[in-house]
Every structure is written in structure tokens, then in C-alpha cells.
Image (tube, rainbow, N blue to C red; front, side):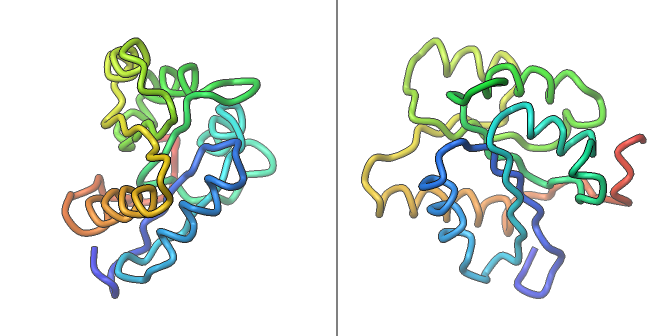
Length: 153
């Protein structure tokens, strides 16, 4: 994907508004054309993917950034539901969380996370990591084609 290419649709599943703002800032550079969508917990993310109200007309995401520690439906539960549903399992899902627990790392990969990234504490490092993710998925990898946004196929 280049600056003139298709939009990278990113679903950010994060309950901390400050972290959402940092991700938005890092994606704001237009070397990768992108649209960020936000869900405050795993339940909202699943509603987004299933296109339940109020998400009836949203596009299928090309990438999911998923925090683990959230209220209601946490990232661990959401990851399992995403990666066991044939309609969503091909969407690259990056666990992006403060936890560096070996248990969380192992269980996330066991649940088929595509990557596990521990959020840096330093703001410059945080921005650098998000830019690397953005550039990798926006320029380097080949993502599954969205022939349509029909999630029923």
C-alpha cells in the first residue's frame, strides 16, 4: 500500500483514551493512508466486526490492534472469539498491551495472535513502535484482499 493506494482500515480496541490518541497521532502521517476505528472493549470490537448497531455500515478492518486489559469483554476473550470465527480469523490481530507477562504472551499466541507487542512507557518509543506497525502493515505485508465488505462470506 502506498500513499495513493487503498485505505488501511484499522480497528483499535483500547479503553484508555490517551492510548487511543497516541495511536491516532502515529497513524496521522500520510505515508500510509488509513482510517482508524475505535472500540472501547472487546464487546464493542465484536459488535463492530459483526456489524451490530451502531456499526451497521462500517468496513471490514484490515488490521486489529487489541489491548488485553479492558472492562466487560477483555482482549483475551475477544482474541479467542476473533480467531475462532472463520469470517474474522484472517484479519491480522496485534496484541498491543502493557502486560509483559509470559502467561499473557503465551496465551495470546496460543489463541493465534499475529504478534504481541508490549506498550513502551516512553512516549517517543511508543510512537516509534506504532509507526513500525503502521509501516509494516501499510507497506510491507500483503493483506487479504477485501473483495467486498460483506462479512457473511
